[in-house]
Length: 57
Image (cartoon, rainbow, N blue to C red; front, side, top):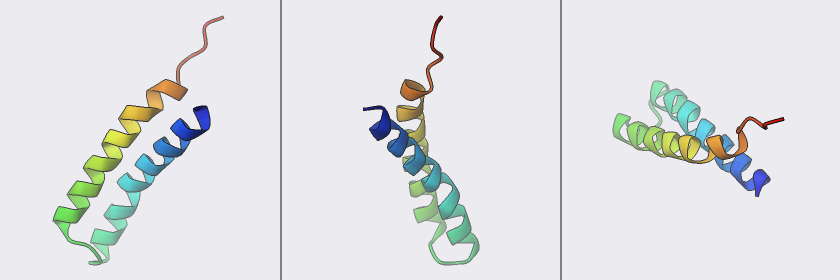
């Protein structure tokens, strides 16, 4: 389960970085860039808190 959450988080981070480079190089439109960034944000904030929890001693 933890591995799946980490993969989803990594995918979310990729979806927030890669579209910026693609729109800078005129490969995708700004509208597609905005959609991918929103999807990445939702993936990251939806999955990262569950595996990044601080363990209590």
